[in-house]
Structure formats: C-alpha cells, structure tokens
Length: 297
Image (cartoon, rainbow, N blue to C red; front, top):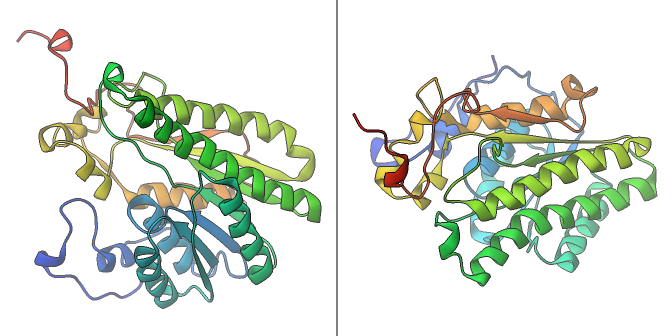
C-alpha cells in the first residue's frame, strides 16, 4: 500500500466529520505511486469533502491536476497541498458550473495550459434536506441547475474538445444511490437520476469517439457534508446499510481512480455503488423519520 508520511494533526484541529488535511494525505491506498504520471485530471468541487479527497489521491498518484469550484481561497489552499503531495502541476480556476460560458472558459484554460484532458471528475454539487412539499421554486431550481445542468455543461464542454481533437476521454460522475428513493432530498434524487441516465446514454453515443463515462454513487460517506444535516439525523446515517457504519471519503476516491485507470478500460455506462450494501437493507432519513414509518416496539 502507498502511504506517504504526514504529520498527525492535533485533536483540536480535527474536523467534526471526516479527516483533517494531514490525515487525508496519509490514508493508505492500494494504488502505486506514479499510476497517473503524465495524465491530466480535472476535479470539480475539489475545495472540500469528497472532491478534495479525490484530488488528493490523484496528486499522490502523480497526475497533473485542474481543480475548480466556487471558493477561490479554498481551492488555492487545496492546490498548495496537492503540489506537496506530488502533483507536478496544478491549475486552479474558480468556475460556476451552472454557467456554460464559465465552463467553456475553464476548458479553454485547460487545453491551453495542459494541452488537453484525460479524465474529468464531475463531483461539484449539493443539496439541502427538506420535505419535497416545502421546496421553493428557487431551491428546486438551484439543485437541479447545479447537479444536473452543471454536470452536463462540464461533460459537453470536455466532450466537444475530445471529439474535435480525436482524442479519447474518461468521465466519472459523482451521483447518489437512487434505487430505493431518497426522502428529504427529492431534488437531488431527480437531478442525480438524470445524470445516471445521461451517463448511460452518452456512453453509447460517444463510444465511437473512445470516450468512457461512468458514475460512482456514494452511500452515507462521512465528510464535512454531514454538517448540512441535523445532528440527530446524521447520527443515524450509520443505519443506512447492513454494515452499520458510514463509509469514508477514501472509499469514493479509490472507486473513482479504479474507473478512470486502466483497471476500468472495459467499463462504460455503469454506476458503481459504494454504499455498504445500502440497496439491500437500511434507511437514511436526511430530514428526519416521519412518524408514519416508525415501527412500534
């Protein structure tokens, strides 16, 4: 296993959920150093949470990185650590993935600076827990626009350039597990379900261009994203699967690398669930469990 040296963070510096930067950099991995040497990887939403963990792992594997998101300061802080972890080049660009022109400007910068792109990881997105009947039009549209339209903007812009230059490409979309419904985040379920269907469709349309597209669907993964939920609800996320525990961000990062490395060269149009068996048993009520579903003791 590849485990770089790192200085342990103090308990006071440790985040409430997930890993500190030092802990994240020191997590063991099954992948060999240099696996992505010479390859160019773009990770959206890389300033925190799952996106940061994905970027960290690619950096440790030698990839040249592009990271984008909404918060320049968080991106610059991440970029410094990615360089220290071994990435030979890191391009940072604040980007609004909802805006197609902003995304095109990002891709122009990638092709100008990096000479192209090998892997696109669409991680940026988000949602807030709320009963569907309480959604405002603005709240619904914001989640759909980011999670679905933003993913399409990024994928379309990269895809056009891959096709125009007759070069292969790889897309990994971070979605959610939608098989059993997602009460409390119906907006995200609709958007991510659309991304899964889009991924399968484009895997067919773009196969002649040697472009592979897949999804990774995390279950309950402990990260700073847990802060978006009430403490009593987040405390029960571990009962969402038969393993009765939450996954961690490295579980997702390694799944993304698996699909984008040569290990995934014969995989396209698939959704890899990393949910501890949550499609088999368990429940996760992001906005609290309604009395109707409570079983008498």
